[in-house]
Image 1 (spheres, one colour):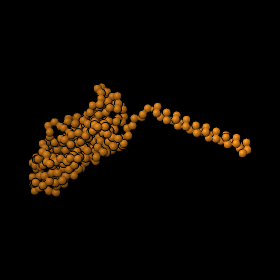
Image 2: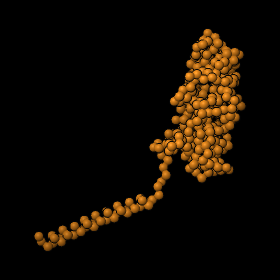
Image 3: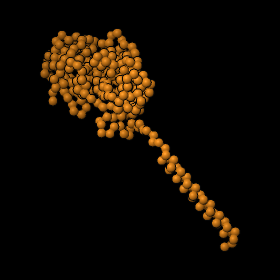
Image 4: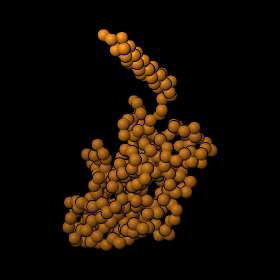
Length: 306
């Protein structure tokens, strides 16, 4: 082999060896840098939503309305019993509770739910405990809220679950005197779990729509004990349908309606099926009196059917 060819071959081998060494050094440096970097916390709600061994789940949280208000109380219509009007009840949320959201027993501890929680109105009245631990202003204690409104867009659709809390409820998760600090966070990562509802007096409230008449009945149902999301509502009157049940339809939120076809004669009993996994049937016997009136408000005890 000529001397010039030998020299060329040696130079090529030397360059190849140097290139391999450089690649090896770059790989080692990259691995060392990755090991030295701190772990970045992840709040990917779509991957792992449960807090280990606790029954709590992750969700996003925001707040709306006045800082110490009930969320939807920017303006309250003077006639907060106009349950047939979506415009009137938009001040109390998409479930139809109106001005009651700011009064006991709700007492402004309410929330709008993202699509999975509001569930086209089926989630209205459901109770949850929420807590936060991801901010210095978080107290870590759980507070109870009721779903009374719908949050159909924005951050409410960015994860599996989202609570758009009233200013009062959001601040209740904070340490003492740090409610305003917590409300300035923006989207907050929280934990939540569904719980049974409990109200003083153990009475279900039925508000009759002012547009009701003997042939058409619409009612708002409030303050259900236990697992309170409603699946079905039926009515039975004291007239020709006595002993049989007429199925109502969800109008919107927690407003239920029925076109009876023939006059509904009082007293009227109301049967309610509630629950997600384990269905419960509640019967309010003679919930509406013999002389029930459009716009009337009636409270009733309930019994349980298996």
